[in-house]
Image 1 (cartoon, rainbow, N blue to C red):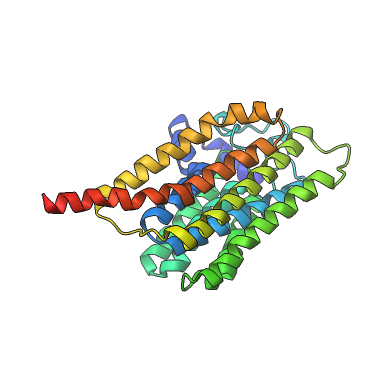
Image 2: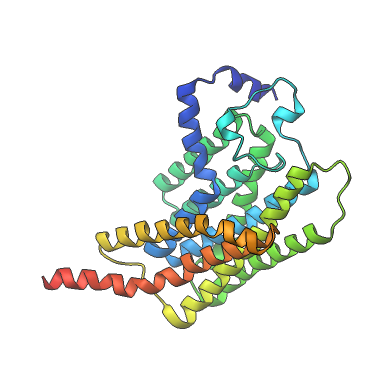
Length: 307
């Protein structure tokens, strides 16, 4: 807590705003959108690698949270304050840091994929900034962010070989592993008895995340199978087609994310399985259905060349 109390003293409204922007690099939305953009426009192997490390790492992180049940810093020490704007994104228990794990998943994969000095240094710097942001905002301790980061780094190193050549025979096991981990987490959260002193809000957060991850991992796995068997889309295109892929694709994913929430919650009577269905649809659409449009978008490139 000494580190957090020191950072608490240097906060300013201007610095708060900057750090709140930085911390979003470890947010759920950034992982999904950035992973999909890489999948659409850069390299399918890298995109799948990034999303696999992100999903497996998130499952393990959420599992550790509910197993260890470490309170947030402001709960551990009375009188300690946080940047209030960060409270909404700090659900669940404190250890380990989900934002740190997510940021490390994205940038560790990038660094290990390209291996160039500039890429490695830039990615390492971005990870450090996200780790610092979680402590500055007062929502995580140094131990939380360190373990969250190391968790993704270890996974990125372990899974790198499976994605090295982009072979379906190697990629499929990693995606399947994410699905199996997610299913195991849902089963654990459904059947395991928890102590009476377990915070109900944090417990509900863990249950919701378990179902959400199951839906997302299933959507990505099926999207991979659809692409390998039927679509086999190309990531390369001229710059304006790439922009269309990203802008339209991201807009549709976010629109579906918002629009589907209320009707699915109503349909499932508030059960967290609604989140599983919603993220299944989002990930299946983003990674499997939207790429089907690329061959049609590519016609814009052909039409421009003829003109």
